[in-house]
Image (cartoon, rainbow, N blue to C red):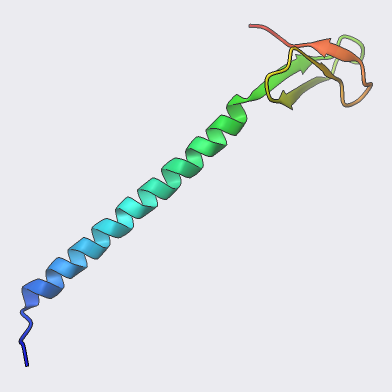
Length: 77
């Protein structure tokens, strides 16, 4: 029967811990990137008829107001 030294268990403990940290890092990095891309794709509009400020997903030059359905141009800063 082969004998296992304490150093093998210590090495395994360190490797599993590092893999867990790296896995969590990759997961949260990808999740944050997807959330950032979703927020970045919002375009802000201001309705000239009712005064409501709203956002639409995607790249649009015009979008209808969700309240009064008037088509407005995007805000440019």
